[in-house]
Length: 323
Image (tube, rainbow, N blue to C red):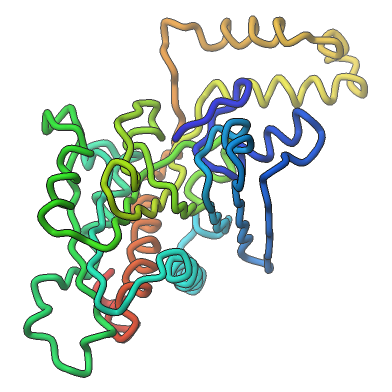
């Protein structure tokens, strides 16, 4: 659910709050924030608790958990496993599922466009068990939930809205929970591929690439929906405006930038339009190594879901399945 805050655009509740707090220079009423961190990971919980806060934030009332780790951009298996465990713990707490629950996992996005392929690639690594429930041994039952998964594709390929496909599946399967995985957009380049967001508010397919579709929410599907998203792009306009803002901040101390010291909002937007003319459209930026990054983060996301949904499956077996 992409939110525009000035010229900054983000799907992350954490960033929306940061941007708004910076603008008004005070905390936002009705938005509660808790943060814990160690040397590798920062975990932030943002609760939007009032309709007024929902309107200000541009995000639905609910809970948004953000797990940030800069090391996710590197081949770091211990960190990847740590993120899986954190994601699993947060998902268990957010879902509150019974042992007999059925869960439908939806991988949103276009498999043929790498920055938008997180959902389909994660689906490839989900341990699906709905078809095995009748033959599971007694010791496994209760620790291996009924999980089914699908990557439904995108409107331009299927001719069907994602929500239409998912509504049909929900009406037939009758899951207790839908988990939707999607690529997001960030307002900060440092959060691209380094951040995972969980939200109990559902998701709008295509929001990360500026192409909002009808949302997958409890209202549209009739069952709870947890969204898991990873920023894979940042808008070029955001990077350009951040550059202008940094130059303006340093203007008082650098004689080369003196002319920017009193730059107005209108002037900044004029510069932005010159750098990124409208004829180019809304450009988005992704790392050149995005193919490897997407594969790695898909493993972390799928691993977290697998651990949360199947607590009695040996982690070593899950890890082997993912790789």
